[in-house]
Length: 106
Image (tube, rainbow, N blue to C red; front, top):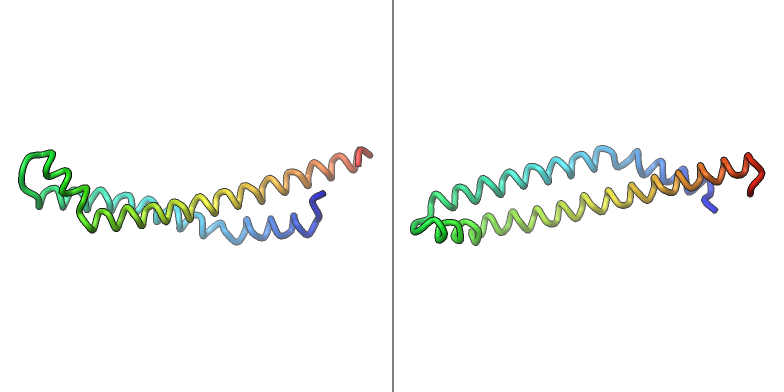
């Protein structure tokens, strides 16, 4: 059974992570843009065939570092999202329990 205290904590978590989720999402989008820009710069600085230049751009240390950062930020975003989803589900279970209780089913 979900308690009122658990629901209160879930609501507090949702409220406290609104801005955090938005900021992390913005970081994901920004890093994604930076990856594309860094690849383009590395491609333009490289010489050789298109394939060689592309390989050079893909292996560029700046690009690799940005991809690693992107992976970390996406993981952070998904952790926040899934924890928020669990909080939302906890509240929904509590609401269902309350409705059942009012109907005399619990």
